[in-house]
Length: 114
Image 1 (cartoon, rainbow, N blue to C red):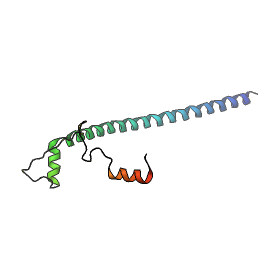
Image 2: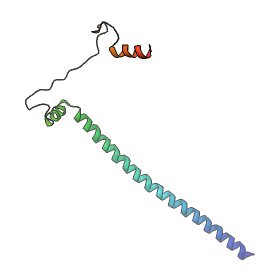
Image 3: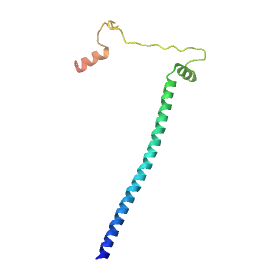
Image 4: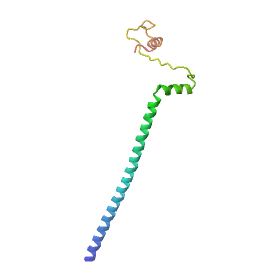
């Protein structure tokens, strides 16, 4: 009976050792993956900083003037004027005296009032 018990204990020990080895291998793989992902996060944060700096640089007037000159929209020595448009005043009247547009009248004629 002793050899059977010894064999059973040996088998149980080998099964536990295999299980712990598998867990250790998985833990090491997860640590490596964690390190790789941490490196990727750092790289993407650096890339984000570069992109934000590029956006800030491209939002400047000097950059716009340079690009306009590159595409021959502005000749050297010419200036660049920006026009800010605002919505029409609340009390402004339309050129047609407040009547509906021609397209709206045609739609109303053929399809009825909507």
